[in-house]
Length: 95
Image (cartoon, rainbow, N blue to C red):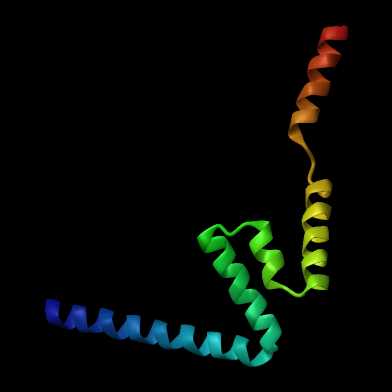
């Protein structure tokens, strides 16, 4: 009986792998070569912990600048919890 369960499980794994391959191919057909290269590089950046300098060196100059600007904008738009805590402490001290 275990042979049948193992064969069924292997069959299910192979079907899942085929589904993943089809999904990957579908996404690849939609993306332009530059978009695909960018996506692959960003995945490598996350996986290998590349620095900002590595990223900027990879992209053309204009896109490197745009990337830096997006990092700065994301950092500025994030609420800082440290400041909020500090403000609460100073309010408590003034009372």
